[in-house]
Amino acid sequence: MSNGLSDARFLTVAEVADMMRVSKMTVYRHVHSGDLPAIRFGRSFRVPESAVLAVLNRPVADAGEHSA
Image (cartoon, rainbow, N blue to C red; front, top):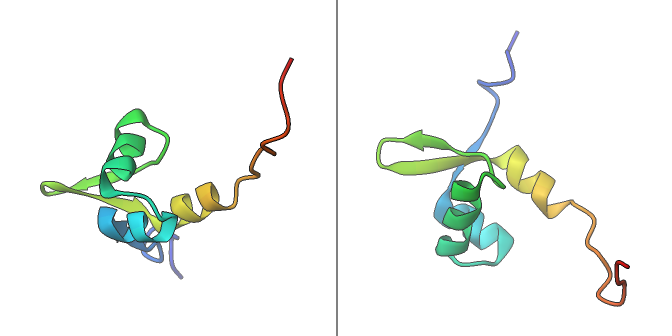
């Protein structure tokens, strides 16, 4: 039986940037701000695929909506 962590898939910053269609610098900004969880692996970061999918599946505010 697996514990979930062994089944987790971790992505490189470049892979995350490709999935999100942003630059690697944007991914690094999200990691450093805490908006995107990541683990340090040597000198690089790895981001859980589930975290990327959660960000991509968040509802997007309509550009016509204004908060008062």
